[in-house]
Image 1 (cartoon, rainbow, N blue to C red):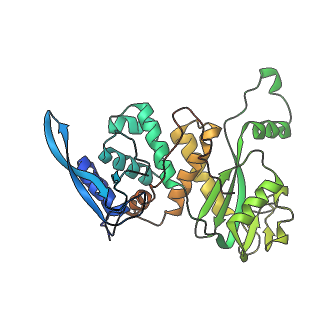
Image 2: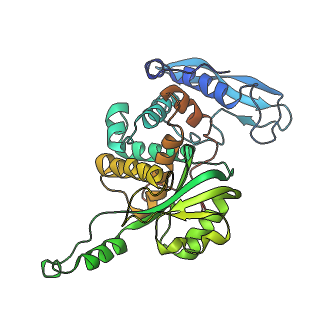
Image 3: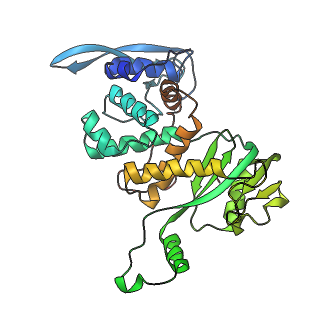
Length: 324
């Protein structure tokens, strides 16, 4: 088993040491070819020019079966990146250890890279934080929805009106996010706009083990009729926040508080087309809340397979994966 590393150790690593650690995490039983899966792999002695001198490097691998050359970064979020791996690992560690997130501006200052580079690094790391498991949630499940976004801009003449109208305008300008929490366990959240009864209940049915679960929600009408699929209890927030012994949604509301404090206090502004990436990041840290920073870092590093196929300033097209 690979030994966990502290942030101080990672800061002192060279790019070669970072690559060796990535190989240990990705291939604990030895290198394997990402193309054919072959285990008969050997290293190629290559030389690169550094500081005006040719120095040997051993990061290039070749498969005996398919004859293809590859490195530890092929097929990962690090592929085709000219950023040294030790800076990549430092960025992952900072994003895993920061409870309310780490902004691209902060990484740009700390790692000595441009803001554009830091922004794209952050989104690649968020891809590694995405929940790629398909195991349904079970037990007591809390479901709730929240709205993310700023206040709508209105003309001064339009500022007078009823509270109901103000809430209606705010919901139109904000992005709804639906969350499902396994009480004491994992959370899954996904932006969904517009928020509909059909869409929300489809997300619930796909992500919950209907035979071994009990659902608790508030009185929102999108949950009406879900009792046809699994036991359903409702807490009426106009009367109380907790009804009986365990009928409440305070667990998922705790996650919402962490998400919103991070978005407002750290990132300040998040475009709706990128919101799912940030929700994945906060979900990852919440699900790994019982781990140490070192364990959380190793978990994210072990999930780096997959490439980000969209670029700075562009929304995700086919890359986005929702909880539905």
